[in-house]
Image 1: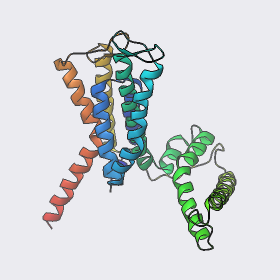
Image 2 (image 1 turned 60 degrees about the vertical axis):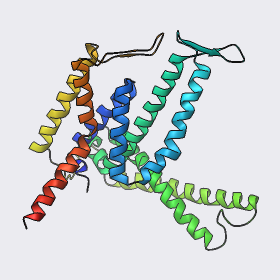
Image 3 (image 1 turned 180 degrees about the vertical axis):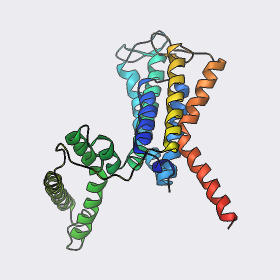
Image 4 (image 1 turned 120 degrees about the vertical axis):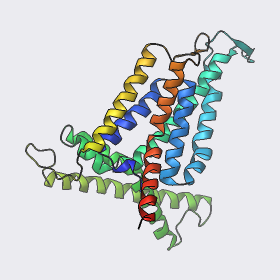
Length: 295
C-alpha cells in the first residue's frame, strides 16, 4: 500500500507538477541526478524490480542515443574536441548538453511512470471534472488507454493462439498477417469502447451544469500540512534559482555554480522533495510495525 497515494489528489498532482516541472525546465546536473535517483527509487517501490529492467533496456538506450546524436547535429560551444570527417566540430559543451538532455528525458519518463500509478483516472476526474469536463474525460481516457490496450492485446493473442493464429505460428508472412489481425481486432475494440464510454457519460449528464458528483476525497489537516511543506520547498528553490545560488550554463562555455551553503541547502531540499513519497512510506511502515508489536 502506497501511503503517498492515500493523500488528497490535489497533493499528488501538485507534487508531480513540481518535480516534473523542475526536471524539464532546469537541466542542472546535480538536480537531474537527484531527480533521477528519487524517481527510480519511487518507481521501484510502486512497481517492483521490473522497473529496473525497463530502465536498463528501455530508457537507458534512448538516453544514450540522445547523448550521442546531439553532438553530431549541434556544434555550439567554445571547447573544440575534434573535427568530424565532414569538417563539423564536436564540442565539449554539446556532449555535456546531450548528457543533460538524456538525463532529463529519463527523469521525466520515470516520474510520469510513477504519476500514472498514483494519479488514477478517478482522481483526475475529481480534480478537473467540474472545471474542464470534456478535456478531463479525454485525458483520463488517454491515461488509461495504454495499459488497457496492452492487456486487451494479450487477451486477443491468447484467444487467437487457441486456433493457431498467433504471431508464433506459421511462416514469416503468416506471422505478420496474424499480428495485423490481432492489432485490427484490438483497435476495433478500442474504438467501440471509446464510443460506449462517451455515450455512457452523456447519459449520466456528465458536464452539464448543476450535476452533482460523489467523492470519497476530503482535504484534511494532514493534506494541508503537506501542501504547506510543498509550497515552502518550492518557493525556497525558486528563490535560490532566481538569486543564482544554483545556476547552469551550457553554451557558449559550460559553467555551474559553486557548492556554496545556499546551493547545498537547495540540493538537500530538492533531495528531500524527490524522496518525499518514500519517506512517507517508510514512516508509515515503522508506525505499523510499532502498532503490531504492541498487540
